[in-house]
Length: 194
Image (cartoon, rainbow, N blue to C red; front, side, top):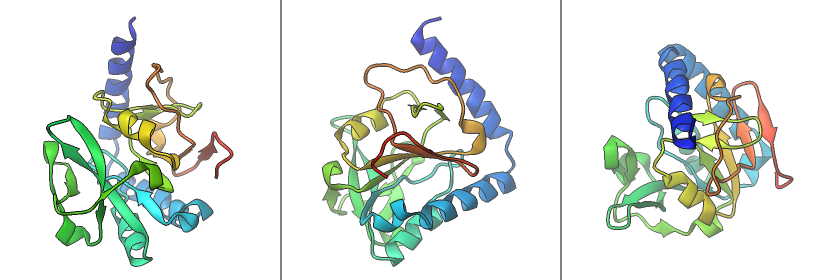
């Protein structure tokens, strides 16, 4: 089986597992992950955080982002640049005023929000479909996150539900290894940065 087919098969399998989760289970696992992150030294030390606006099938970190803003952290979210077909980071200060529906209905910062270099970020919270025990992630197949992660210099932390972790993720040369992965029951570290 070629790599593309392997990735597509893995995506379908994990998406089925996520779809089988109840809203309550997703909310509970999200809450545990957010509390673990919020109470960690990794989060406490980070002054600039690149987060993500969760979709329905992803860990809901919206409350964590709100707490980070209250605590005075600089929080950035991805925004899509159509002309280049890439995502960049923009700072949000108020989630109600600064965030709108963007590409594919994903929430993103408004155009007037300040752009933030990915090189100056302390912590990057990374979504995905599946995560492997050796620190790789399987995204949605467009390569947007790998391009951003290649540019970013902060600690890259995968954030996932229990059913998304432990998969054999086919790896290509452009795939970026994460520094850590957090699930409700695990916190795996693959680098000494933390």
